[in-house]
Every structure is written in structure tokens, then in C-alpha cells.
Image 1 (cartoon, rainbow, N blue to C red):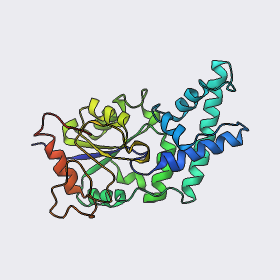
Image 2 (tube, rainbow, N blue to C red; image 1 turned 90 degrees about the horizontal axis):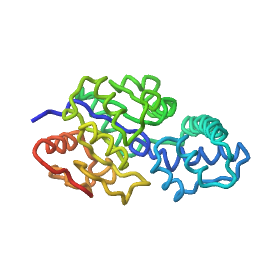
Image 3 (cartoon, helix red, strand yellow; image 1 turned 60 degrees about the horizontal axis):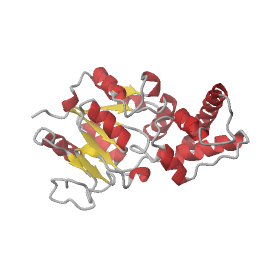
Image 4 (cartoon, helix red, strand yellow; image 1 turned 180 degrees about the vertical axis):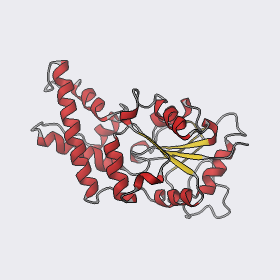
Length: 263
């Protein structure tokens, strides 16, 4: 049986509810700043999350709007400028204390550090967004918590392409089956599985009802052991938080099953 040697974290929706409460809000503030009569409510933003990448979402949305620039080049330039403005706004929102980590995440990270289990970041959000979020949550030396940090600027292709996970594995020097990925979205699960990495899903606000093909375990969050499938092996699987031992047990299961769960 291959022992768990690394835990790879997605960021948006997984470490914090950044999509609904951060990025979406910042996009709308950027539209206002540019005098655009555009607004992404929670439903519309949920639809746009099928497209990976902030600039890509803006371009996709513009393709449906009669009031968007007619020229493809002008659309690309507007998307670039809006995205840069949105990232600046997002950074201020986070620095002002508006983006806590999801319950149970910090505790699980601390357990990994106490056990010398290496962690990595594997995300296709920008490095600036990762830095502002984790600096606020973990402190000035947040990057010391992670043995590998792979972000949007480091890859040519975004999730569901596996490139971000393959680069993280290469940086860690870890075999795919010796790692576990923590994800919240179908695109993220597909990316990790395509890299050969077992995946544990902590559902986020926008993927409460999503179907996940081939996940090792799926649950509502790390703050409680309730409602996880398959259940944890803990004798007290009640409102205690998910712990590293639970992650290790699910990971060990990956070597003994031929078909991960689909839920």
C-alpha cells in the first residue's frame, strides 16, 4: 500500500468560498468602475464557473451580450483590463478581512505541518490572488507552509487539463498515487484524476449538487465528519471535524478499489 506523502490543495471554493463571496463581488465592482451595466448574480456566476479562468469568463459572457465590443481584439483588451481591476479589488476585499478560510481547513493544514506531511497548491487562479488570501490567513510567511505552489501563470492550460497537477507533482518529486488532491469542482476533479491523483471533494457553494466522477470521498466540508460518503472510519463520526487520519484512510482506500465513488 502506498503511503500518503503529499496533500495538494485547490484554492477557490476549496480553501475559502472565494468564488461567491469574493471574486463574484469583485467582478461586479469592476464592472461598476468601468461604467458597464453588467452584473453577475449568484445564478449567472454559477453558470460561468463552467469556464475556467477569470478573463475567460468575461470573454464568454461578452459573447452573449449585444453591448459588448464588436471587435474580438477589443473584447480581449477589455477583458484583460477588467480582470486586472477585479484582481485589485479582490485583494482589497481580502485584506479588509472579508474572506475567511472555510471551517476545518486551517486545522487540517496544521495537522499536516505537525506530521511533516508536505502540502502543495495546485490552482489556476493567479498567484496574486493566492498570495493575498493566504497571507491574510496564514501570515507573512504563508508560502513556508507549502512545498510546491503552482498557479495560473505557471501553466499553459487550465483545469480540467491536468497540467497544474503534473507540475505540482514534478515540483514535489512525488508519484501521483502517493498524493491526494482536495477539490470542490468537477473541472478540478477531472484535472486531478487525469494526472493520476486520488481526489477528495469538499463541496463548495456552487457545487452543492454537482456530480463527481471517480472521487475517493465527497462531503460538505472539513468542519464535520457528518454526511461524508463513504463515511469516515472514526468511531465518533459526528460533529468532530475531518482530520488527517480520515484523509489517510480515504487515500489508503484508493489502493484497494477498482472504481472510486460517483456521487
